[in-house]
Length: 197
Image 1 (tube, helix red, strand yellow):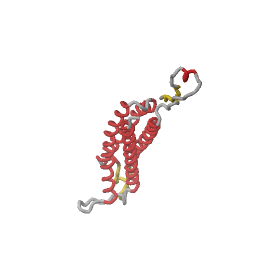
Image 2 (cartoon, rainbow, N blue to C red; image 1 turned 180 degrees about the vertical axis):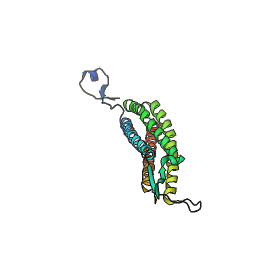
Image 3 (cartoon, helix red, strand yellow; image 1 turned 120 degrees about the vertical axis):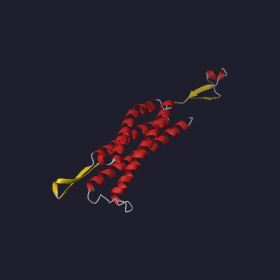
Image 4 (cartoon, rainbow, N blue to C red; image 1 turned 90 degrees about the horizontal axis):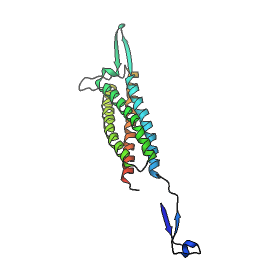
């Protein structure tokens, strides 16, 4: 970026009738590079949240003895298909986030390139939908586990399976953190794509 300033003076360029060219150093990338760096950092945080959610839910297990050791009650994530869906989708979300890191690095190196950002915003929206669906469905089951439902005679199991409920609740909260980070990533990418300069 250069600026032409016409300065009357005694220099050779002024005597020849040519304007003096004064250049100002321009920062390549500017605020878009800062947004791209923040995008990369948020992706790392979303990876941690999604992996934490999948691992916590996948490892949730509690067994209660009932009268004898031969007859036991067990609660684990694979007892509920919703929790299985949750583990699979959060693992997919974490995998996508890991695979999206190179494109995020490209956005840092070339902050004015629209292609990588457009590709990321489309895929971020798809995986935001997956993360939201799995988090919301798991949240509904966790709610039933905590409170039960009198109309359908579902009893609250968290009175007996406290550790299991604490782990599943933590996994749901972690997934909702990943959803929030996805929303921030999409908004930031949309702002960068919407600005021309």
